[in-house]
Length: 64
Image 1 (cartoon, one colour):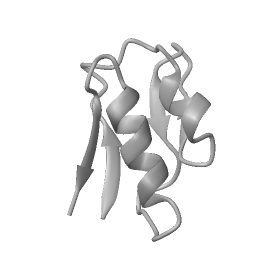
Image 2 (cartoon, rainbow, N blue to C red):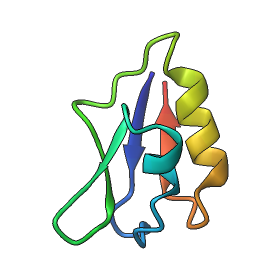
Image 3 (cartoon, helix red, strand yellow):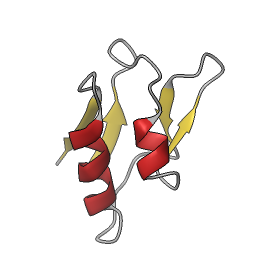
């Protein structure tokens, strides 16, 4: 599974980073970006889902 952020939807609220700083960071404009290639492990899938549920723009996607 992989997580990604749609840059067209993200408005830089920062909730993803607050919830899962090991998965998300900010770009130069303050918008969220995925660290690395977005591959999720058993340990990080729950954090990714929590960040997805708390994203006000619904910009976080988890893909098989």
